[in-house]
Image 1 (cartoon, rainbow, N blue to C red):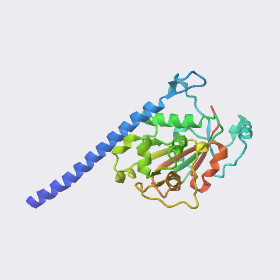
Image 2 (tube, one colour):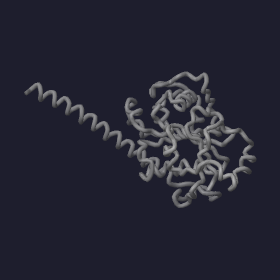
Image 3 (cartoon, one colour):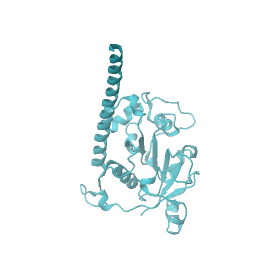
Image 4 (cartoon, one colour):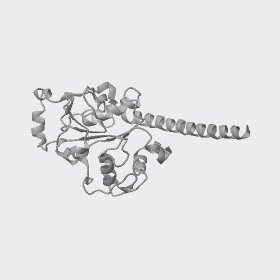
Length: 265
């Protein structure tokens, strides 16, 4: 009886330890949601004077987004691209709603891990990212995702000469992740949003990059991103990259599961 009782206590203790750890992580993700909601619910509109912002949900207009064939994005002069993005051109591609960017449709038989969204300047790429993030943070859409982690190229340019692991890179811009143990990170469904590839000063080399597969292994930001996009690092993560057309070719077509284009409201 004593032996059996001790065994029960051991299993019970392990169960409650795991439960408490899970509750702690849920609280951390809850704090992260609050932080993202605070950071995405307002937007500076047009040429309003500095400091004037409006609620995103008040000014947001549904964007016309299409899923394109998985092929190389042609580098074109963006004025030419702007001219061809007309109402007539909206007949090309399959319309897709912003919240469904990672949804697998009935006629598709592969999971969607990496999405590349292109669009000319002012089409609404960053707007779509902000709306997706806000909807998740408010508990309205994509609640199967444990955490949305926005990391803009403009921000990462500032630390391009630093060495980071994936975990410390996340913590650098999202301090709530200081509480997450490294071994727990890959258990959760995380979406990384890399906005503004066209603003990147990073050298993304998908052919000769060092292989990194551990979220605690330090390397350059360039190497972390290429390994994350290729799936060597954190293969269960979702990746969303936005770019103007001229810069989109930096991502090899073989790494992209869904190619979309934002064509404006």
